[in-house]
Image 1 (cartoon, helix red, strand yellow):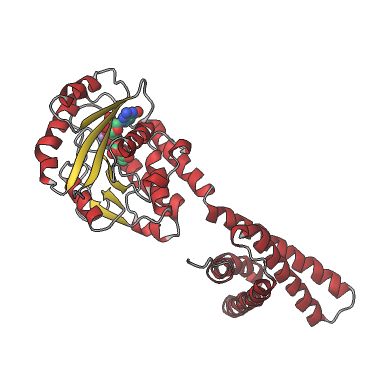
Image 2 (image 1 turned 90 degrees about the vertical axis):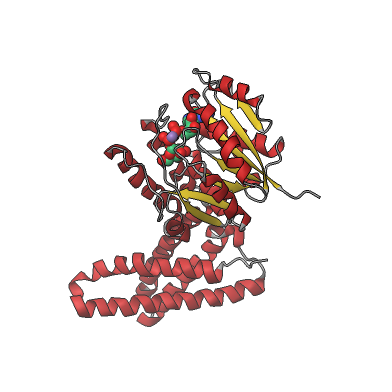
Length: 385
Ligand code: GDD
Ligand code: MN
């Protein structure tokens, strides 16, 4: 029985005639033979480069049976090249693992066995990072490219993941050197509906893999200088990346619930304020007016969060409703205590004249995070099956 697994190295090319021949020879001659327990294919996805890159690949195919060429009729962008390349690799070549690689030797070929070793260790997604110890950007980069790489990377991480744990774990989100497990991961990604088929696709795959629960490892990447040919990154690349991460974060189910949670909370505040006015004007005892108006707000929050904010986790059985409603009142009491204690403390330290400043600060920095946490971790927690 043969249980070697298949890895497909995918290299998209556009006008890489100066380097592609050397890269192919180097990979088949020096790198692949040193990876014994994997069956390795190399797939070049070329957009019918005007400089004839694909013709060089066709020639080399006579020499290397595991060399494949996928030719797009026109320039479709790097993301599209990977989409068609991945599909081909999965269907025709039965890939278990896909490796994203550049033609221009900026990714050190000796990193390929390291990526696969991490996959062998059980990781699902291995990323080359310039930001961890042992990794770096080329010394020769000008200020502009360094700036875009540093700030762009940080913004991409913030927009995609903050304050989740991936924000801290993934140090180089725009990296182009990656290995991805197919089963359960790449085969779950809807590649027909990406937000970007240009450089932004990198962030989109990153986001999807992480959301699918991939076990992520980073290896140091010493990103080289390009010595031949030209970078295809353009001034639109930063825009495309920013647009892609913004769309991903906006459509993230957690973002959508968070916005609804804000709307529901604000509605709860209005219920509280209006009913307080009505009750006190109707001559109710002060404490009774506060008690009932607060409880009405709690009921409003509970109901709308259940029907709207957390609609995909909503409970309907009477017994659950009762149990959860009691819990909800308890966590709401917690919020009340937080607000009362910090409000009183702040007033005694800095004086009552800033009261109207303390309140929104306490709400935004303490009560909102507290409620959000309680709702997600206790009230509308989905049971792991
Ligand atoms: N088929 C195809 N179509 N290939 C393309 C296209 C395209 O439209 N655009 C770029 N490529 C190929 C290039 O020929 C090269 O093999 C690879 O994609 C990377 O392109 P480069 O032009 O070398 O990108 P870079 O070096 O500026 O950018 C690198 O760093 C980025 C992070 O800063 C790459 O590794 C990127 O993948 C990475 O995101
Ligand atoms: Mn490059």
